[in-house]
Amino acid sequence: MKTTPDRKQLLEARNKTVSDIIAPGLKVLFCGINPGLYSAAVNHHFARPGNRFWPALYRSGFTPRLYHPSEENLLLSSKLGITNIVARATASADEISREELEEGGRRLAEKVKRYKPKAVAILGLGAYRSAFHNPNAGLGLQEEKLGDTPVWVLPNPSGINARYRIEDLVRYMEQLRKWVEEISR
Image 1 (cartoon, one colour):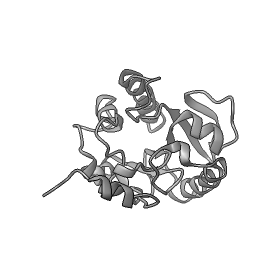
Image 2 (cartoon, helix red, strand yellow):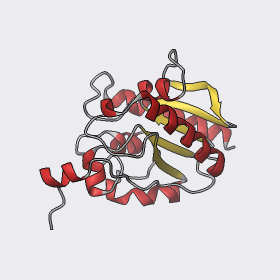
Image 3 (cartoon, helix red, strand yellow):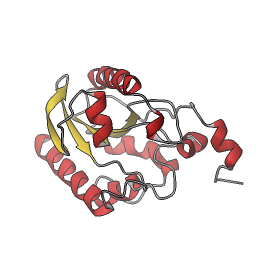
Image 4 (tube, helix red, strand yellow):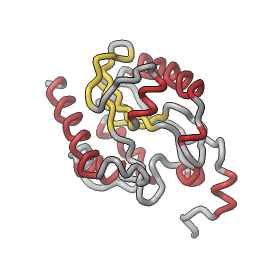
């Protein structure tokens, strides 16, 4: 059984979506920018080899072991979820317009209002700045909320995001995890 998509499958994945991993009452709803072609082709979040989301999630203490992207539904038992600002898959986040990010931000706000996670963690500073009209935002806990839900901004876990090392991503995720544990007491 072939598990790695070929070129044709990757091209056919353009504009496809990957279903949210979501439920009411999550501790954290992680929010990517949008699915890449690889993720859409295999129908799992953060699935491209080299993406640092799953290793960082484990190393920061959110999961009891390193999950494979195909095990993403196990996140729900830890009260974690995944969604995206923009649902459609692209080869690069650069293919997404500011208008799509803004509309995705509005849809995310509605999702957060409906599911009420304790926090939403947006994985990508530039996407957050564009989607929520906050050009001066930095990483970490934001002053602004989505409804009543606190927002954290974390580095994009894509392997091509060389600005932040996995250690940086782990550190920010660990800060988020400890913060959620503290407010949950």
